[in-house]
Length: 288
Length: 288
Image 1: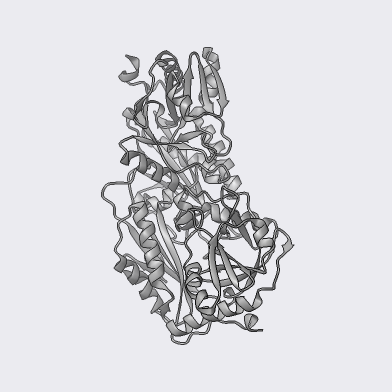
Image 2 (image 1 turned 30 degrees about the vertical axis):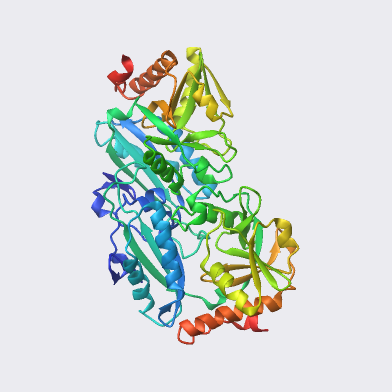
């Protein structure tokens, strides 16, 4: 289903202006979040992030419109789903300079959420594409997302599931769709944002929640050897929650941090239960 | 007017799938070129470039389709126009990984070409956004064009006309829409491509044509001081041809290379006359 121009409609009924700058120039921003039992999960944080991104791009937006675009789709059906919210600057004349009078386009779509996405495992291969800390495309979810998909394409051609992106300074940044964490003993390390990394919603959730479990979290410049020497490496993403990274560039990664990972998974699962009318995201594979 | 799905139609008749990856992810490529007297200018070079870009992105395309999308719009009317050709990977399921079965979308639009675009002058301000040589968005005309428009926005906020982009290594790359050249005596210097710079069609035209005028051209790593110490700085772009850069970050640039610039302008104008049934692009401002 599609939320478009203020209401839920059939997808074939949408009109679209081919002069839209989102299509022609990547001039827009988006968010993706899950909903369970008719309720979006951590919507406030996603709205904060897209409002900040739109402000950097100078796209005028009403938060209440975005909220409606998410909640109306979530409420259609209690089945778990993924909602993608897309905002473009709207149509403009030829050229790069944004028009003075803007008419942003807001739409959102709803697709099924597959339980197998949550708490799974994947392998990474390092991509040659570096994250550029001076580009807004590295720290915002913009429609100019090509680097991310070219990275994952390269990684999958090497037989891995996703790409590991380094920043231009050679430090660890993120995957094409997730933030990265390292478990070292009873503590967590995650790369500093520094412009190269999207400020992940689940990343911030763990930074806030892990200390309550007695697990210390530090943001730090990390390198490939830190991943290779970690007790455990995992990725966080709003739709996939926590994904264990089992190998990097063909090297098997340690699985010694399982107890810490289990505790974090339980905190995430509990947050969904509390916020989403008892919905249970924790699949059997992580409970063993 | 619009060329869409194999024919020329009214713009309001176009259908568009909101699951198109060009819109959602910047997953596509484009070209912009002028046409005069019903004929596109240097279309072969533009087709070569977009075919190479699509190949890097692994988007299957037929060159003959792209040629039709350009020539049919050009032939509609002899009035000078700008044709933009846009290619997306087409629609796909949610997520970054391209679908195995692709159905690329090709469309093109025609808008009037304003003679004041050609052989004009502009000022530059350096943007904080660096060109990332590891990203395909730096060396290809992709739909993920956000850095370019954020750069020009920043430059215009500083009172300049366009942005000067440096590469991540600090060397000169390009403007948001043009390649850069320096005149030194009777020779030209232009930045090496090295992944950070779009291989401009007019850039290559000058590299090929200038030696015939006895003007040597070298591709070289250039820095800000090279621009400040040049006899003349100019930019090249397929729609604007050659644009003199009169100031950089508020510093007035030299105008000592006028004779060389005049000779290059004449070569460009002559190429248009020969290829486009005598069309005259050379405005009075450059003939004085």
